[in-house]
Image (cartoon, rainbow, N blue to C red; front, side, top):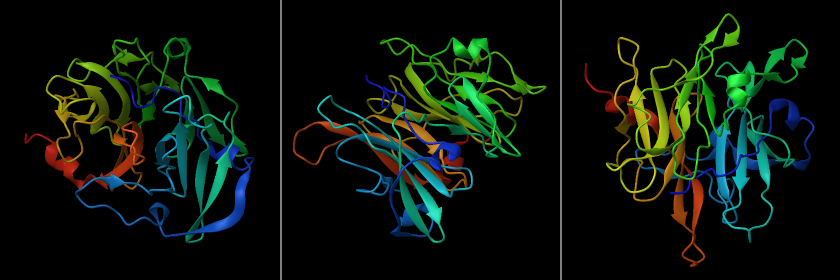
Length: 297
């Protein structure tokens, strides 16, 4: 099984966007929220075909906490593909402006309040004059090859690791106390079971964690799973998100939009050029079904 995100995605931080080159200064014809796309219902559909999703590359994306920026990261599926072009869509009035992002700019993972930008084992904090210099989360974080990291409002971090070619990487968490993060600890077996567990998302209120992984009970390849927080603070059993999202194809990279309305994720789909090869496209779906997955207490 091959992970959806086999290389670090490159996106722009808010600070870097201001210094990146614009793909023209024209405000696009996209109007309204969500890049002007018609929101999905209970059936997952590709997000912004031809705008975000491309035939050339794998595509992923996420909104800034204020939803005024949408970061698009891309990667090659094959060595024959051209160099990926990462872009950011920035809200201008009721429209959007596309900005090309330099390939050496690393993607940040935002805290829900937008005051911290995480870059793997390092981070920046918002200050009165902009963003602080890079700081380290600590030596224990530096030893982990982090692919994905997410934060709650309390500052709790959930992160993955690249692991070996056997898919043995695990998910960890770290709580913030007295302005510092504890050394990351493995999440329980209810979550760290099966293989290829990666790309976590923790709800801002810490009510659940989502991730992708491969289990014998799944739909085929990597599926999306969720674990809800129990009353005693422990994490409940892993629940497959089901046929609403998962298919025989490979799904991964779950993210809930900052407004809590939509689930974004990636899915490996057949290319339309008749080659028989697959590409990773970004999908979205109404997230209201998630609350129905929580076991009745």
